[in-house]
Length: 545
Image (tube, rainbow, N blue to C red):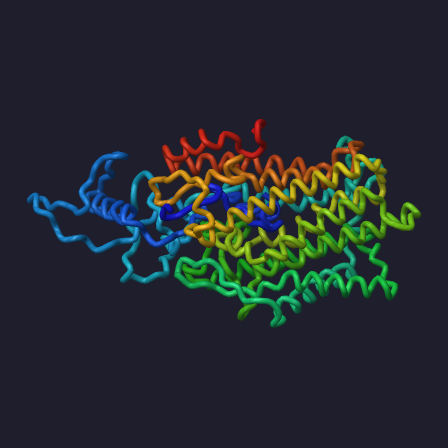
């Protein structure tokens, strides 16, 4: 077995819904830069061949030159007098542009120039200069300002549009509601109460303590992964509230006010995070959000793992209030449909949307530990991008299908109903199976049970997986996600484009992410990547793309 195996040669998608959300607006995840897929490289004990390559790289670094690919090099450097010198002290080499890979996990040796990292005797914490951001994503400083203004405005547009009798995209709202319409103290109180309730469930000593991936300092943080427990308790509490007469249709009638309140909470949280990040040490800052520009760093987030004692703010927001809130809002929309349409039970379309998305969120919370290896947790700072995405984007845009069906019922024939269910099951199988294959390699690539799978070795000491679903397309989990997204939208019919917003947004997101993956992987893996592309021809959809 090779020194390391990466299931998707450049893939950091988690097997949880936050994988699509990355940043929950532009991932994901993701990463979301949108999930530059280089985090599934699993370091193993170096092989003799890899140790030889390391010695060669050290020699090349000392001589300030890089040997051509494939050239023969001695295992030990030669002095200027022609004598064989002593074996140099092993030094850890890192690639300057691979800031998305934690330094403590870097056992890869990419093709190209080398930069010598500090020796093991030096401090493990990077200096402030070494951790400053040089490459700016999302359009750089001007782009950060644009996204800070555009994202809230876009969510507002979607909410106003879906609330119209005719939500056609050509039928824009004639005028903005009055300012008083946006705000409701009771709605703000409900949002705060919901977040505090989820925080209480998070800190309860229930569930396992999971270790995160190594930080640049080598430290591993611990996380309380009890998201599924939190969802079950939340479901029981909501069911009891409905049984005792609490009217959940309030969520539908005050959707705009609840979204405004959530936006205010995300904004205040982002301001707090930015202020506290000014006192964070260099080793506590994210490499991607430490540019020195206020707008950019506020958007991307400066501090990697902001914590209040053991309460991890980023991990909590990623998986709790927004995701579980997504399911709560969907339920409220089903009750609102019954009330508005005079039904004794939700329509088949509404039931499908609720059940499909509930299954998706439940799967993510059941496999909550998987998010610890994603770009969001490992490399992205916690700033406005993730705070807004977790608390506003997910619960108030991913529920558009359910909101649309409240006022625009769409009856389904039995054959169509059956076809949509089968489509969802197929998508979920591809999604879960491909992620399971990936996680098996990530955890133990030397497992004898996996020895039959084919790989392509690379000069980095890792190997590219070309078996199972990862031999069918380069991103099979993307394929499963797209099939499931199609099943979410079909129950809404084809009368309007708005309920297909998520499907369109997701296609654009994945195609853009795939193009970035291709460029990065070609740079990193060189000729091995070209061989991989010849072996696995299609990117996401077999026979199409």
